[in-house]
Image 1 (cartoon, rainbow, N blue to C red):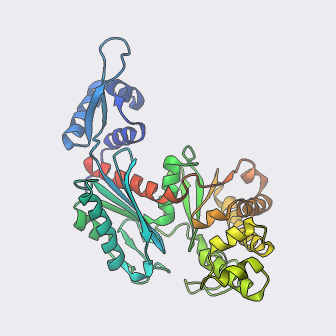
Image 2: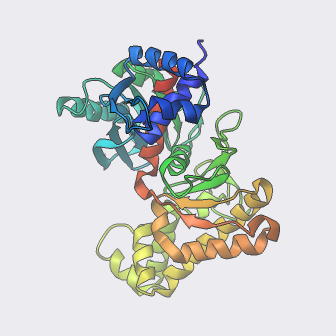
Image 3: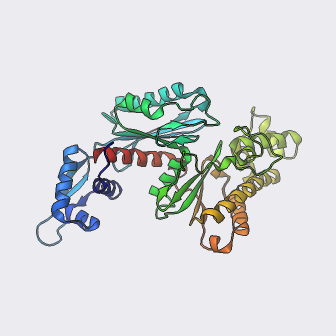
Length: 392
């Protein structure tokens, strides 16, 4: 396999992140001789990834020409959750030019779900959003072999084990594709354009149907040898707890996740301990974490307790991770982030109380800045990276 040119990658990522830049400024930023830079840029222009963008402001003497990523570059970013799919088409600067969101049941299996994703990408082409895609990035809600581009024994994704997701997307669209765990792409998105933009060592905790943790160390995602690093939802927090989807008992995910909170809300409603939840249950067949959040905001004591109990359990797991990895930030995202400051306060309380002062003295625990867009943002970053690697 051909090794990507590190200088080409640097150039393309600089243009992606900074927009049009003069040749003189690029030479200064990369600290390379201008003749070499001009030679490298010529090669990238020949690939179609870089174009000229007019004249730069004068710095005294002859004006330099601006260069930029080809404005016709198109990347597809897919964030596949347990019950929804978000698709964005972006330009080379990772600015969205089209977006599609719809419900999707991951349990329908890879053929049904990927067929629908292909239909959405084809719809974008028919609508004139792109003539062709330059790369695709996709996140899925389960462990992934990043090297092979396949999910591996994902607990909530029946039928997906070892399914060739990357190979299918590459063949279908004639462009490189990359597959990662959904929480990893959220961490990458938050690092690229969110609250962790300037942070090299942080944890991104996704709270949704499941619970996962993206781990950033020294400016890179840490995936582990087999791609399952950060699967904190299956850390045991109660040996006497309920059965988890993974087959073990008392996992964090079985006690605090979107599904677990919905079950606890239904129990509270039927037991009469929460009149607000009981009233909602008479109007629909099931309750969700959003019901708990809304009732808590209205002052329902039982709902506040449910959120605090979950925050305490999650905080205990995170306290252990803080002692182990000593991150400089913890970011909370995913669908359950709407539980808001009741949840955040409980997590902070436990983490700060149970971790050593040296590890928490400068440790912000914050909500995701990108929110629902963290996943597609990270998928677009991965797509652009794999496209740049092939271009160089």
